[in-house]
Image (cartoon, rainbow, N blue to C red):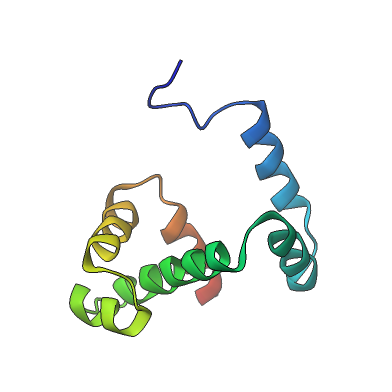
Length: 97
């Protein structure tokens, strides 16, 4: 059954546990390169960059220009940054320390 919590299942929990088990950037690079296409890695990287720029209060259009993302995608990232589960903010704050 598809629904709001369809991302919560044994397979996704296993993926999250695997990501947490990676010990360093080198291991992460190897894992994500095997898991994702170059295009997917690039897209996720752009979204992460957008989240960090939005956290710095840059305007959406400037973020879109800097990242190459559409303003629609920047708006979606901003929505999750400000109204999501707090994952973007958690990661951004950890990197600031």
